[in-house]
Length: 247
Image 1 (spheres, one colour):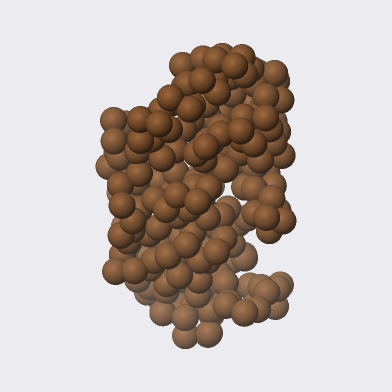
Image 2 (spheres, one colour):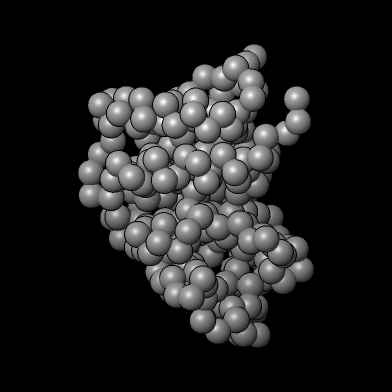
């Protein structure tokens, strides 16, 4: 079978969904021991229930049969968005201003960084701005200088000496490695004493990210590829949203 043109499929699905007063959030076409078309819908200001999904599924199934867009047998699933829903259109970003967001850039920023997380504060003309602590990043904000300590984070004296040095040199944000429990435990003191926002750099163990958030880290940097799967990422995001709401 030739690869399915997902963009063409989305062009068929979107008018059906929007025509019934819903928003097409995302479309997935996957082979899971059989082809599955998943359509995620939302409705601003309202929750999505079983009746909504059934209605859209009925209408969409009829249109897809007529259009004959999919040349193989498949299952159609319609549901509400996932917890860590993607933001694709500018209207999506504007709708979630004030919320925690994780952003991956198409091209590296600085030496090699693509992943950012913080509070989504502004969206204008296709540019997104987030806050890391009290430092705005992206959008029309001035370029923020970020660096990383080279110490064992649990060594408070050495870590704080480096943080103060880079802050005096003009750094706006500092990143610290958190590979061990004792590093996560040291974060509370580091965050309290640091003159600039602190990002906790986490790999492999999502529980360290949870502890970093509880310790008050201004931002947590994850590698989604080695943190244990989407459900672990979602757990970190959920705790981050709770922490942000309490600030």
